Image (cartoon, rainbow, N blue to C red; front, side, top):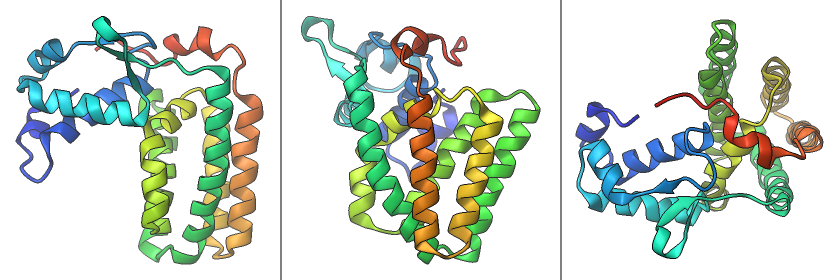
Length: 227
């Protein structure tokens, strides 16, 4: 939820704080596909003017997370089975490249940060904090993109970030996912770009095969908690 600290952070545009809060609610299942997002109501809830909410909704449209429905206004998008296939295709191409570059460019500090995220995910899972464990796993992928340090790659992935996180939260076996991420970390830490690329391709391919065919029926219930 948007906090007082978010609204008072002078270094961060308010529209981004609103966008990030809405994006998190979408990919954590608080807002199911088809949920209406009313600008006026959101502005009142966040205690902000309607302008940053309008800008946040515009950015989420660009990411494909919400759609315009005429008189109904904005609503959370529904992905089709073909959308999911297309998203995996793009993810496999771009994330494999990100891991290849990260293996070459990661510093000692970068590697320590990645390992810390994995330790955090394990710690959250041990406490039953599933939502926080998912966040740490999503940040692991986002961090690899930053470490790859390629502005064109980053620009290509940013509009897909929300939908990528949406894919991540369909993973039901979190201990297995964290181990997969540890294997990916080891491949990146090896400094061998081919090893990192191969491990990334294997990781994505595995979860592509396991992605639930009935995701449109099960998706709204995943990890949803009362706001």
